[in-house]
Length: 207
Ligand code: HEC
Ligand code: HEC
Ligand code: HEC
Ligand code: HEC
Ligand code: HEC
Ligand code: HEC
Image (cartoon, rainbow, N blue to C red; front, side):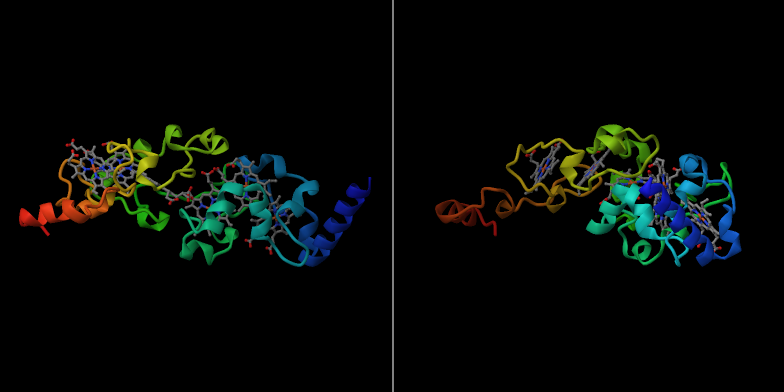
Protein backbone atom coordinates (compact mmCIF):
# COMPACT_ATOMS: atom_id res chain seq x y z
CA UNK A 1 0.00 0.00 0.00
CA UNK A 2 2.64 2.49 1.09
CA UNK A 3 4.59 1.84 -2.08
CA UNK A 4 1.52 2.37 -4.29
CA UNK A 5 0.81 5.69 -2.58
CA UNK A 6 4.42 6.75 -3.02
CA UNK A 7 4.32 5.89 -6.72
CA UNK A 8 1.10 7.88 -7.09
CA UNK A 9 2.61 10.94 -5.40
CA UNK A 10 5.71 10.75 -7.54
CA UNK A 11 3.52 10.50 -10.62
CA UNK A 12 1.52 13.59 -9.63
CA UNK A 13 4.77 15.46 -9.02
CA UNK A 14 6.00 14.31 -12.42
CA UNK A 15 2.84 15.58 -14.07
CA UNK A 16 3.27 18.97 -12.47
CA UNK A 17 6.93 19.07 -13.43
CA UNK A 18 6.31 18.20 -17.07
CA UNK A 19 3.13 20.27 -17.36
CA UNK A 20 -0.33 19.13 -18.42
CA UNK A 21 1.15 17.01 -21.23
CA UNK A 22 2.67 14.76 -18.60
CA UNK A 23 -0.64 13.39 -17.36
CA UNK A 24 -1.00 11.03 -20.23
CA UNK A 25 1.75 9.21 -21.99
CA UNK A 26 2.73 10.98 -25.21
CA UNK A 27 2.71 7.58 -26.91
CA UNK A 28 3.28 3.84 -26.74
CA UNK A 29 6.63 2.32 -25.91
CA UNK A 30 8.81 0.55 -28.45
CA UNK A 31 8.43 -3.28 -28.65
CA UNK A 32 11.36 -4.05 -26.33
CA UNK A 33 9.79 -1.80 -23.67
CA UNK A 34 6.20 -3.09 -24.01
CA UNK A 35 6.19 -3.98 -20.31
CA UNK A 36 6.86 -0.32 -19.44
CA UNK A 37 3.62 1.07 -20.89
CA UNK A 38 1.19 2.59 -18.39
CA UNK A 39 1.25 5.08 -15.52
CA UNK A 40 2.92 2.71 -13.07
CA UNK A 41 6.12 2.81 -15.05
CA UNK A 42 6.67 6.50 -15.83
CA UNK A 43 9.12 6.96 -13.00
CA UNK A 44 11.29 4.08 -14.16
CA UNK A 45 12.63 6.43 -16.84
CA UNK A 46 11.56 9.89 -15.68
CA UNK A 47 12.64 11.78 -12.59
CA UNK A 48 10.76 14.61 -11.03
CA UNK A 49 11.78 17.91 -12.57
CA UNK A 50 14.02 16.21 -15.09
CA UNK A 51 12.70 14.75 -18.30
CA UNK A 52 14.54 11.45 -18.60
CA UNK A 53 17.40 10.24 -16.51
CA UNK A 54 20.23 8.15 -17.96
CA UNK A 55 20.84 6.70 -14.50
CA UNK A 56 17.34 5.23 -14.52
CA UNK A 57 17.89 3.59 -17.90
CA UNK A 58 21.10 2.09 -16.55
CA UNK A 59 19.35 0.48 -13.59
CA UNK A 60 17.94 -2.02 -16.08
CA UNK A 61 20.81 -2.00 -18.56
CA UNK A 62 23.64 -3.39 -16.48
CA UNK A 63 25.98 -4.55 -19.29
CA UNK A 64 25.94 -1.00 -20.70
CA UNK A 65 26.50 0.42 -17.22
CA UNK A 66 29.50 -1.85 -16.69
CA UNK A 67 31.05 -0.92 -20.06
CA UNK A 68 30.63 2.75 -19.21
CA UNK A 69 32.28 2.30 -15.80
CA UNK A 70 35.18 0.44 -17.38
CA UNK A 71 35.32 2.77 -20.42
CA UNK A 72 35.00 -0.27 -22.68
CA UNK A 73 33.12 -0.91 -25.92
CA UNK A 74 31.02 1.64 -27.78
CA UNK A 75 28.98 2.99 -24.88
CA UNK A 76 32.20 3.37 -22.88
CA UNK A 77 33.92 5.51 -25.53
CA UNK A 78 34.53 9.18 -24.76
CA UNK A 79 32.18 10.41 -27.51
CA UNK A 80 29.22 8.32 -26.34
CA UNK A 81 29.91 8.85 -22.64
CA UNK A 82 29.53 12.59 -23.12
CA UNK A 83 25.93 12.18 -24.35
CA UNK A 84 22.65 11.26 -22.66
CA UNK A 85 20.85 8.03 -23.62
CA UNK A 86 17.88 9.94 -25.08
CA UNK A 87 20.07 11.76 -27.58
CA UNK A 88 20.26 8.41 -29.44
CA UNK A 89 17.37 6.31 -28.02
CA UNK A 90 13.99 8.02 -28.09
CA UNK A 91 10.64 6.77 -26.82
CA UNK A 92 6.84 7.08 -27.07
CA UNK A 93 6.78 6.59 -30.84
CA UNK A 94 4.93 3.27 -30.87
CA UNK A 95 5.80 -0.43 -31.05
CA UNK A 96 7.52 -0.35 -34.45
CA UNK A 97 9.73 2.62 -33.70
CA UNK A 98 13.42 1.77 -34.04
CA UNK A 99 14.86 2.76 -30.68
CA UNK A 100 18.29 1.70 -31.99
CA UNK A 101 19.55 3.30 -35.20
CA UNK A 102 22.54 1.33 -36.41
CA UNK A 103 24.04 0.53 -39.82
CA UNK A 104 26.49 -2.32 -39.39
CA UNK A 105 28.09 -1.62 -42.78
CA UNK A 106 28.98 1.93 -41.81
CA UNK A 107 30.17 1.32 -38.27
CA UNK A 108 33.76 2.40 -37.64
CA UNK A 109 34.87 -0.35 -35.29
CA UNK A 110 37.55 1.84 -33.70
CA UNK A 111 34.66 3.49 -31.87
CA UNK A 112 34.25 0.27 -29.90
CA UNK A 113 37.85 0.54 -28.72
CA UNK A 114 39.15 -2.29 -30.94
CA UNK A 115 40.26 -1.52 -34.51
CA UNK A 116 39.67 -4.31 -37.05
CA UNK A 117 43.09 -4.78 -38.65
CA UNK A 118 44.33 -7.32 -41.22
CA UNK A 119 42.27 -10.53 -41.28
CA UNK A 120 39.87 -9.12 -38.66
CA UNK A 121 38.68 -6.56 -41.21
CA UNK A 122 37.92 -9.22 -43.82
CA UNK A 123 35.73 -11.61 -41.84
CA UNK A 124 32.03 -11.25 -41.06
CA UNK A 125 30.79 -9.51 -37.92
CA UNK A 126 29.28 -12.80 -36.80
CA UNK A 127 32.62 -14.62 -36.97
CA UNK A 128 33.41 -12.76 -33.74
CA UNK A 129 29.99 -11.65 -32.50
CA UNK A 130 28.62 -15.10 -31.78
CA UNK A 131 27.38 -16.68 -28.54
CA UNK A 132 30.44 -18.94 -28.20
CA UNK A 133 32.64 -15.86 -27.67
CA UNK A 134 30.37 -14.30 -25.01
CA UNK A 135 31.37 -15.16 -21.45
CA UNK A 136 28.39 -13.60 -19.62
CA UNK A 137 25.46 -16.05 -19.63
CA UNK A 138 22.74 -13.35 -19.67
CA UNK A 139 24.23 -11.54 -22.66
CA UNK A 140 24.87 -14.85 -24.44
CA UNK A 141 21.10 -15.50 -24.51
CA UNK A 142 20.35 -12.32 -26.51
CA UNK A 143 20.19 -12.66 -30.26
CA UNK A 144 21.95 -10.15 -32.48
CA UNK A 145 23.71 -8.31 -29.70
CA UNK A 146 27.14 -6.69 -30.10
CA UNK A 147 27.78 -6.68 -26.37
CA UNK A 148 29.75 -9.16 -24.33
CA UNK A 149 33.02 -9.64 -26.22
CA UNK A 150 36.48 -9.30 -24.75
CA UNK A 151 39.33 -7.89 -26.85
CA UNK A 152 42.06 -10.10 -25.33
CA UNK A 153 43.50 -12.30 -28.08
CA UNK A 154 43.11 -15.41 -25.96
CA UNK A 155 39.37 -14.81 -25.63
CA UNK A 156 39.08 -16.12 -29.21
CA UNK A 157 42.42 -17.69 -30.15
CA UNK A 158 43.92 -20.91 -28.88
CA UNK A 159 47.05 -20.56 -26.81
CA UNK A 160 49.40 -22.04 -29.39
CA UNK A 161 52.50 -21.42 -27.24
CA UNK A 162 50.87 -22.85 -24.13
CA UNK A 163 51.61 -19.94 -21.80
CA UNK A 164 55.27 -19.61 -22.78
CA UNK A 165 54.77 -16.36 -24.71
CA UNK A 166 53.02 -13.09 -23.91
CA UNK A 167 49.21 -13.24 -24.02
CA UNK A 168 49.36 -10.18 -26.27
CA UNK A 169 50.09 -12.02 -29.51
CA UNK A 170 50.42 -8.68 -31.34
CA UNK A 171 53.85 -8.20 -29.75
CA UNK A 172 55.18 -10.73 -32.26
CA UNK A 173 52.41 -11.38 -34.80
CA UNK A 174 50.62 -9.07 -37.22
CA UNK A 175 46.88 -9.35 -37.86
CA UNK A 176 47.17 -10.93 -41.31
CA UNK A 177 48.46 -14.36 -40.31
CA UNK A 178 50.13 -16.15 -37.41
CA UNK A 179 52.62 -17.61 -39.86
CA UNK A 180 55.00 -14.68 -40.22
CA UNK A 181 56.03 -13.80 -36.69
CA UNK A 182 58.21 -10.71 -36.27
CA UNK A 183 61.96 -11.36 -35.91
CA UNK A 184 62.37 -13.34 -32.76
CA UNK A 185 63.20 -11.38 -29.61
CA UNK A 186 63.79 -13.88 -26.87
CA UNK A 187 63.33 -11.27 -24.15
CA UNK A 188 59.62 -11.15 -24.99
CA UNK A 189 59.20 -14.80 -24.12
CA UNK A 190 58.74 -15.93 -20.57
CA UNK A 191 62.26 -17.28 -20.81
CA UNK A 192 64.48 -14.24 -21.41
CA UNK A 193 68.01 -15.29 -22.18
CA UNK A 194 70.30 -14.54 -19.30
CA UNK A 195 73.96 -15.10 -18.47
CA UNK A 196 75.71 -17.60 -20.69
CA UNK A 197 72.67 -18.27 -22.88
CA UNK A 198 72.79 -14.63 -23.91
CA UNK A 199 76.52 -14.77 -24.62
CA UNK A 200 75.87 -17.79 -26.76
CA UNK A 201 73.47 -15.81 -28.95
CA UNK A 202 75.89 -12.85 -29.14
CA UNK A 203 78.53 -15.24 -30.35
CA UNK A 204 76.27 -15.94 -33.33
CA UNK A 205 76.11 -12.22 -34.10
CA UNK A 206 72.54 -11.61 -32.92
CA UNK A 207 71.67 -8.61 -30.72
C1 HEC B 1 11.24 3.38 -21.17
C2 HEC B 1 11.39 4.71 -20.65
C3 HEC B 1 10.18 5.62 -20.54
C4 HEC B 1 9.01 5.40 -19.86
C5 HEC B 1 8.61 4.15 -19.10
C6 HEC B 1 8.21 6.61 -20.01
N1 HEC B 1 8.89 7.52 -20.76
FE1 HEC B 1 8.24 9.38 -21.19
N2 HEC B 1 9.93 9.69 -22.32
C7 HEC B 1 10.94 8.78 -22.47
C8 HEC B 1 11.89 9.31 -23.43
C9 HEC B 1 13.17 8.62 -23.88
C10 HEC B 1 11.41 10.58 -23.82
C11 HEC B 1 12.07 11.57 -24.78
C12 HEC B 1 12.82 12.58 -23.97
C13 HEC B 1 13.59 13.56 -24.80
O1 HEC B 1 13.45 13.57 -26.02
O2 HEC B 1 14.33 14.35 -24.17
C14 HEC B 1 10.17 10.78 -23.10
C15 HEC B 1 9.40 11.93 -23.20
C16 HEC B 1 8.24 12.16 -22.46
C17 HEC B 1 7.51 13.39 -22.47
C18 HEC B 1 7.84 14.60 -23.28
C19 HEC B 1 8.78 15.42 -22.44
C20 HEC B 1 9.23 16.65 -23.11
O3 HEC B 1 9.91 17.41 -22.43
O4 HEC B 1 8.95 16.80 -24.29
C21 HEC B 1 6.46 13.25 -21.57
C22 HEC B 1 5.41 14.26 -21.23
C23 HEC B 1 6.56 11.90 -21.05
N3 HEC B 1 7.66 11.27 -21.60
C24 HEC B 1 5.68 11.37 -20.13
C25 HEC B 1 5.67 10.06 -19.74
C26 HEC B 1 4.62 9.47 -18.95
C27 HEC B 1 3.39 10.20 -18.41
C28 HEC B 1 4.97 8.17 -18.76
C29 HEC B 1 4.18 7.09 -18.07
C30 HEC B 1 2.84 6.90 -18.60
C31 HEC B 1 6.24 7.95 -19.44
N4 HEC B 1 6.62 9.12 -20.03
C32 HEC B 1 6.95 6.76 -19.48
C33 HEC B 1 11.06 7.58 -21.85
C34 HEC B 1 10.10 6.96 -21.10
C1 HEC C 1 12.50 -1.47 -16.13
C2 HEC C 1 13.67 -1.80 -16.92
C3 HEC C 1 14.05 -0.90 -18.08
C4 HEC C 1 14.21 0.46 -18.09
C5 HEC C 1 13.95 1.46 -16.97
C6 HEC C 1 14.70 0.79 -19.41
N1 HEC C 1 14.83 -0.34 -20.17
FE1 HEC C 1 15.55 -0.45 -22.06
N2 HEC C 1 15.10 -2.43 -22.15
C7 HEC C 1 14.61 -3.18 -21.09
C8 HEC C 1 14.41 -4.54 -21.53
C9 HEC C 1 13.91 -5.69 -20.67
C10 HEC C 1 14.78 -4.60 -22.89
C11 HEC C 1 14.75 -5.81 -23.84
C12 HEC C 1 15.90 -6.72 -23.59
C13 HEC C 1 17.22 -6.06 -23.83
O1 HEC C 1 17.51 -5.66 -24.96
O2 HEC C 1 17.99 -5.90 -22.86
C14 HEC C 1 15.22 -3.23 -23.25
C15 HEC C 1 15.73 -2.88 -24.48
C16 HEC C 1 16.32 -1.65 -24.75
C17 HEC C 1 17.02 -1.33 -25.98
C18 HEC C 1 17.28 -2.27 -27.14
C19 HEC C 1 16.04 -2.35 -27.97
C20 HEC C 1 16.15 -3.30 -29.12
O3 HEC C 1 15.19 -3.29 -29.92
O4 HEC C 1 17.13 -4.03 -29.23
C21 HEC C 1 17.44 -0.03 -25.87
C22 HEC C 1 18.20 0.78 -26.89
C23 HEC C 1 17.00 0.46 -24.57
N3 HEC C 1 16.33 -0.55 -23.93
C24 HEC C 1 17.24 1.74 -24.10
C25 HEC C 1 16.70 2.24 -22.92
C26 HEC C 1 16.78 3.63 -22.52
C27 HEC C 1 17.46 4.73 -23.30
C28 HEC C 1 16.13 3.74 -21.32
C29 HEC C 1 15.89 5.00 -20.49
C30 HEC C 1 15.15 6.06 -21.17
C31 HEC C 1 15.68 2.40 -20.96
N4 HEC C 1 16.03 1.54 -21.96
C32 HEC C 1 15.01 2.07 -19.79
C33 HEC C 1 14.38 -2.72 -19.82
C34 HEC C 1 14.42 -1.40 -19.40
C1 HEC D 1 25.78 8.24 -29.56
C2 HEC D 1 24.58 7.44 -29.56
C3 HEC D 1 24.27 6.56 -28.37
C4 HEC D 1 24.17 6.92 -27.05
C5 HEC D 1 24.45 8.27 -26.41
C6 HEC D 1 23.72 5.74 -26.34
N1 HEC D 1 23.56 4.71 -27.21
FE1 HEC D 1 22.86 2.84 -26.79
N2 HEC D 1 23.22 2.24 -28.69
C7 HEC D 1 23.68 3.04 -29.70
C8 HEC D 1 23.93 2.23 -30.88
C9 HEC D 1 24.46 2.74 -32.22
C10 HEC D 1 23.59 0.91 -30.53
C11 HEC D 1 23.69 -0.35 -31.42
C12 HEC D 1 25.12 -0.92 -31.42
C13 HEC D 1 25.56 -1.46 -30.09
O1 HEC D 1 24.99 -2.45 -29.64
O2 HEC D 1 26.46 -0.87 -29.51
C14 HEC D 1 23.13 0.95 -29.16
C15 HEC D 1 22.66 -0.14 -28.45
C16 HEC D 1 22.07 -0.08 -27.18
C17 HEC D 1 21.39 -1.16 -26.51
C18 HEC D 1 21.17 -2.56 -27.07
C19 HEC D 1 22.36 -3.41 -26.69
C20 HEC D 1 22.13 -4.88 -26.90
O3 HEC D 1 22.69 -5.44 -27.84
O4 HEC D 1 21.41 -5.48 -26.11
C21 HEC D 1 20.99 -0.70 -25.27
C22 HEC D 1 20.24 -1.47 -24.21
C23 HEC D 1 21.43 0.68 -25.18
N3 HEC D 1 22.07 1.02 -26.36
C24 HEC D 1 21.22 1.49 -24.08
C25 HEC D 1 21.78 2.75 -23.93
C26 HEC D 1 21.74 3.49 -22.68
C27 HEC D 1 21.09 3.03 -21.40
C28 HEC D 1 22.39 4.68 -22.92
C29 HEC D 1 22.68 5.80 -21.96
C30 HEC D 1 23.46 5.46 -20.78
C31 HEC D 1 22.82 4.67 -24.33
N4 HEC D 1 22.45 3.47 -24.88
C32 HEC D 1 23.49 5.70 -24.98
C33 HEC D 1 23.88 4.40 -29.63
C34 HEC D 1 23.90 5.15 -28.46
C1 HEC E 1 37.82 -9.85 -34.86
C2 HEC E 1 36.61 -9.87 -34.12
C3 HEC E 1 35.52 -8.86 -34.42
C4 HEC E 1 34.88 -8.63 -35.62
C5 HEC E 1 35.14 -9.29 -36.95
C6 HEC E 1 33.87 -7.63 -35.34
N1 HEC E 1 33.90 -7.26 -34.02
FE1 HEC E 1 32.68 -5.92 -33.12
N2 HEC E 1 33.71 -6.16 -31.34
C7 HEC E 1 34.76 -7.04 -31.16
C8 HEC E 1 35.23 -6.92 -29.80
C9 HEC E 1 36.38 -7.71 -29.19
C10 HEC E 1 34.42 -5.94 -29.17
C11 HEC E 1 34.49 -5.47 -27.72
C12 HEC E 1 35.54 -4.42 -27.56
C13 HEC E 1 35.72 -4.06 -26.11
O1 HEC E 1 34.73 -4.04 -25.36
O2 HEC E 1 36.86 -3.80 -25.72
C14 HEC E 1 33.46 -5.49 -30.19
C15 HEC E 1 32.49 -4.53 -29.97
C16 HEC E 1 31.55 -4.11 -30.92
C17 HEC E 1 30.52 -3.13 -30.69
C18 HEC E 1 30.28 -2.36 -29.41
C19 HEC E 1 29.13 -2.89 -28.58
C20 HEC E 1 28.85 -1.95 -27.42
O3 HEC E 1 27.74 -1.42 -27.34
O4 HEC E 1 29.77 -1.70 -26.65
C21 HEC E 1 29.81 -2.99 -31.84
C22 HEC E 1 28.62 -2.10 -32.06
C23 HEC E 1 30.41 -3.91 -32.80
N3 HEC E 1 31.46 -4.57 -32.20
C24 HEC E 1 29.96 -4.05 -34.09
C25 HEC E 1 30.57 -4.85 -35.05
C26 HEC E 1 30.16 -4.92 -36.46
C27 HEC E 1 28.98 -4.17 -37.05
C28 HEC E 1 31.03 -5.78 -37.08
C29 HEC E 1 31.07 -6.17 -38.56
C30 HEC E 1 31.15 -5.06 -39.48
C31 HEC E 1 31.97 -6.25 -36.07
N4 HEC E 1 31.65 -5.67 -34.86
C32 HEC E 1 33.00 -7.14 -36.31
C33 HEC E 1 35.29 -7.90 -32.10
C34 HEC E 1 34.90 -7.98 -33.42
C1 HEC F 1 36.38 -11.64 -30.51
C2 HEC F 1 37.24 -12.66 -31.09
C3 HEC F 1 38.65 -12.31 -31.47
C4 HEC F 1 39.58 -11.60 -30.75
C5 HEC F 1 39.41 -10.92 -29.41
C6 HEC F 1 40.81 -11.64 -31.51
N1 HEC F 1 40.61 -12.34 -32.67
FE1 HEC F 1 41.99 -12.69 -34.13
N2 HEC F 1 40.57 -13.65 -35.24
C7 HEC F 1 39.27 -13.91 -34.84
C8 HEC F 1 38.60 -14.67 -35.87
C9 HEC F 1 37.16 -15.18 -35.81
C10 HEC F 1 39.53 -14.83 -36.92
C11 HEC F 1 39.29 -15.55 -38.27
C12 HEC F 1 39.32 -17.04 -38.09
C13 HEC F 1 40.69 -17.50 -37.77
O1 HEC F 1 41.56 -17.36 -38.62
O2 HEC F 1 40.89 -17.98 -36.65
C14 HEC F 1 40.77 -14.20 -36.48
C15 HEC F 1 41.95 -14.18 -37.22
C16 HEC F 1 43.17 -13.68 -36.75
C17 HEC F 1 44.44 -13.79 -37.47
C18 HEC F 1 44.65 -14.43 -38.81
C19 HEC F 1 44.86 -15.90 -38.61
C20 HEC F 1 45.20 -16.58 -39.89
O3 HEC F 1 46.28 -17.15 -39.95
O4 HEC F 1 44.37 -16.54 -40.80
C21 HEC F 1 45.38 -13.20 -36.68
C22 HEC F 1 46.87 -13.10 -37.00
C23 HEC F 1 44.72 -12.72 -35.48
N3 HEC F 1 43.37 -13.05 -35.56
C24 HEC F 1 45.37 -12.07 -34.46
C25 HEC F 1 44.74 -11.61 -33.31
C26 HEC F 1 45.41 -10.88 -32.25
C27 HEC F 1 46.90 -10.50 -32.26
C28 HEC F 1 44.48 -10.60 -31.30
C29 HEC F 1 44.65 -9.82 -30.00
C30 HEC F 1 45.15 -8.45 -30.15
C31 HEC F 1 43.21 -11.14 -31.77
N4 HEC F 1 43.41 -11.76 -32.97
C32 HEC F 1 42.00 -11.05 -31.09
C33 HEC F 1 38.71 -13.55 -33.66
C34 HEC F 1 39.31 -12.78 -32.67
C1 HEC G 1 57.42 -13.48 -28.12
C2 HEC G 1 56.88 -13.57 -29.45
C3 HEC G 1 55.57 -14.31 -29.64
C4 HEC G 1 54.40 -14.09 -28.98
C5 HEC G 1 54.09 -13.12 -27.86
C6 HEC G 1 53.42 -14.99 -29.59
N1 HEC G 1 54.02 -15.71 -30.59
FE1 HEC G 1 53.13 -17.09 -31.79
N2 HEC G 1 54.88 -17.45 -32.73
C7 HEC G 1 56.09 -16.81 -32.45
C8 HEC G 1 57.12 -17.35 -33.31
C9 HEC G 1 58.58 -16.91 -33.35
C10 HEC G 1 56.49 -18.37 -34.09
C11 HEC G 1 57.14 -19.25 -35.16
C12 HEC G 1 57.91 -20.35 -34.48
C13 HEC G 1 56.97 -21.35 -33.86
O1 HEC G 1 56.18 -21.97 -34.58
O2 HEC G 1 57.04 -21.51 -32.64
C14 HEC G 1 55.09 -18.39 -33.71
C15 HEC G 1 54.13 -19.25 -34.23
C16 HEC G 1 52.78 -19.22 -33.94
C17 HEC G 1 51.79 -20.04 -34.58
C18 HEC G 1 52.02 -21.08 -35.66
C19 HEC G 1 51.95 -20.41 -37.01
C20 HEC G 1 52.13 -21.41 -38.14
O3 HEC G 1 53.25 -21.60 -38.54
O4 HEC G 1 51.12 -21.97 -38.56
C21 HEC G 1 50.58 -19.71 -34.01
C22 HEC G 1 49.23 -20.29 -34.38
C23 HEC G 1 50.86 -18.71 -33.02
N3 HEC G 1 52.20 -18.43 -32.99
C24 HEC G 1 49.89 -18.15 -32.23
C25 HEC G 1 50.13 -17.22 -31.22
C26 HEC G 1 49.10 -16.71 -30.35
C27 HEC G 1 47.64 -17.08 -30.41
C28 HEC G 1 49.73 -15.85 -29.49
C29 HEC G 1 49.11 -15.05 -28.36
C30 HEC G 1 48.34 -15.82 -27.39
C31 HEC G 1 51.15 -15.81 -29.85
N4 HEC G 1 51.34 -16.67 -30.90
C32 HEC G 1 52.11 -15.07 -29.20
C33 HEC G 1 56.28 -15.80 -31.55
C34 HEC G 1 55.33 -15.30 -30.66
